[in-house]
Image (cartoon, rainbow, N blue to C red; front, side, top):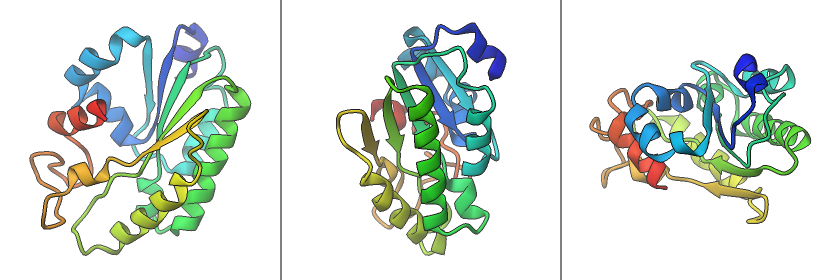
Length: 181
């Protein structure tokens, strides 16, 4: 990612974990259709928690690029690692601060953490609380918050396998939902 950043020519930057990285795998055809022509780059990395992404941003991944828009989705791995929603919120806030310090003119699109696991799993409630806290950062001038999680849940509260076969990572149909949002 550092080498890609040094090449520049990025107007749209996606940052996150494996769900973001999936744009270039499960979501590739949707990426090509919606984002490729926009000088987009995907800096999603499987397994990343908030602390990992923050370290990456502090160590060169934003040097050489000046994207007009940054799309950030991060936090599910930190939740699954046992961090509280408040700890994850602080991690996301530190990431936002780092982005803002290095890319002050970029518009930020903060995505809510997508639901995962069974509907009665305690992490679902943690994600809902986290997303409610993150939504408060929206100012509709430089930062917008979008929570598309409800689009991945059926009427019974379950995650349909035809959107997220492993109840975590969207498939092509799931990435189309994100792109359209």
